[in-house]
Structures are given as structure tokens and as C-alpha cells.
Image (cartoon, rainbow, N blue to C red; front, side):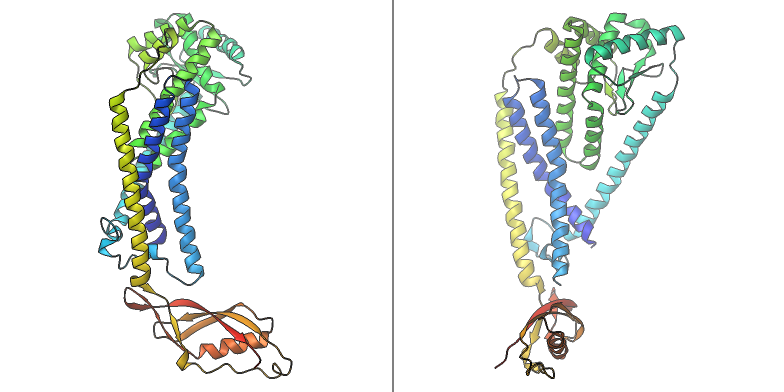
Length: 427
């Protein structure tokens, strides 16, 4: 099996318990912060989602680094010796299923990547097209958007597009941000309420939420199979909308106006666009309540008990997975792979070079030999010299004539490198 495929498969499977652990930790932290500012919960959820990406990435790097280190030493790392994985090393034979796991993951990730790319192309096309309104209407709303941008503290130019085929106001772009507004809202919503929705979209631009949203989509694409990732990403979107509402309400100095605008959106029942930042994201009724009459949230003890049970299960799974890995590593290293060993009885003592004894040259030379499956040396090299090239070459030539007991993998002889050192000492 390809080394990277095996390492990636193990990483994906280990993330099952890692994601559960991170999700439980985030759920506990969010429960403790349930009555604090939305910014604190947002930071916790973002940190947990980034950890969902960072932990498996670090695991994959460690596995590949270990493989490179073992190869550099001429050894097969036990964790990659899959030809004879012991039956009791884990719950099932990983070698028989990891290739299928990685293949299925790659197929689904590619499909989700294509979906995300098509969404981005759709947004780009919408931002480039001309507004579906009269010139006077465009100028009026351009001026209103510019005024709100100054009040909210934005120094960058923000474009406005009025689109007929759009369901809800959305924000897209980071370097050149643009606000897309449905043409239907121009005639169906009072201007002061629509301005409140525009203030909400400008709050997203001020906070650079578009970039965070794109990163969320990337993490969702890579780790699509884990429910904790989707739950954390949804919590980020919910808290982000609350933060944008609060910022827009402070800009308008009139929270009730934004609440009324959100209420109108609830009546119109628009859908949410996931690749852009929509004004109707999150739970609209909860957002309206937070704007008009925020109330302390009580802790759901039933959910807390269930959460504690899941956390205990995660710790148990982690302990079992760690024990299985250690057992597999020990048994595989002792039973599946055995290092090549030199047969000293077949060796003749290396001959001292001419003049070396008279010059009283001594030292230690470190050598590496490529041992074939028949026990003969196929190649050799000096890893670290003694300081005297003649002694190094003499030790290399002499030990090359030795016979080795070849390394074995699953009981079969395999070609491998072995390192030895020879000490030149005057008697």
C-alpha cells in the first residue's frame, strides 16, 4: 500500500474520536458561555473548528515524518508494515480497508470541492453583472450604502448589485466586497428596513467574515464525514449573525428597526446561501429576540448529561485506540519485521592499510550496508568517517565480505540497510 494512502487513511479514522473529543470540549465551553457575549462563543467555536483541521494535519505530518526517519535509518517503521498486521492489533484489519476508505473520502471531497467551486463561480458571475434596476434606483441605494459604510467605519469601497434572481441579501468578496440585494426587496420592503439589512451586511464586511466563511467551507469539504465539524460550523454561523446584528444595531442606534427587517425576512421565508453571507442566516426568531429582549438561557441538564456521556465515551475510545496502537507497534516490530544481523564468524578482520600503523592512525568509522535477500552486501557507504580515509576504506572493504542474516518481513527475507561501526585501535 502507498505510504501516503496508509497514513492518510489512519488519520481520517483517528479523527472519528478526535472530532468527538473536540466537539464535546467545545460544547462544554459554549454551555458555560451561553449567557456571555456572542464574540466569546464565536472565538471558542472557531478555535474548535480550526483544531479539527490542525489535529489530523499534525497527525498526518507525524506519520509521514516517522516513515521518512525510519527509511533514513534503513528500517521499515512498524506502523507501515501492513503485510502481516496481527489480527488482535485492533478492531479490524486496517490494511484491507484503508485503501477503500481513502478512495471514498477522496471521491466525496472532490464532489464537495466541485460544488463549492461552482458556488464561487455563481457568486462571481452575479457580482460582475449589471443591476436589474433603473439608474435612479441604483444611485439612490449606492448613496445609502456609502452613508452606512461611513457610519460603520468602513474605509474600503463597497459595491452594490440589485439582482432579480436572488432570494436574499448576501455579501461576497474580500478584496473588492459587494452586497447583492434581491430586486424583489426594493418594492416589497420599506426603505428604512432594507437599510437595516444593508447595515447587517456591512457588519460582515467590516469583520472580514467572508474569509472565515470560505475557510469553514474548506474544512467542511475535507472533514465532511464528521458530524462535529458540521455542528461547529453551524454554531459559528449562528454566533456570527448575532455579532453582525449587534454591530448593525449599534450603527443604526435603533435595534428595533433591524428586528423588524428580520421579521419581514421571516415572513418571506427566504433560503440561506452557504458560500456567501446572507442577512437571513441563523435562527431569525432567536436573533430578533436578542435584539429586542435578550433573556438569560438556562442550561439543559438532559443535554449536559448526554454530553458528559459522549465525552466519557470519547476518552474510553481514545484509551482503547492508544492501547491498540501501542500493542500493534510492539507486536509488529517484534514479530513482523526483524533487522538484518551480521554473521561475525564469516568475517575476516579488516587489514590495516600500509603506513597506518606506523603513523599510529586510529578512530571509529560508521558504515551503512545494503544487505540483499541472500545475505550478501549489494552496496555500502561511509556515514561518518574516522578522520583517515585509508582506515575508512579498509573497514568498508573488509566488512563488505561478511555474510549477513537478511532482514525479514512477515517471515520473508527483504532487502534492507543496516548500520555498523568499526573501531580501529592499536594493540
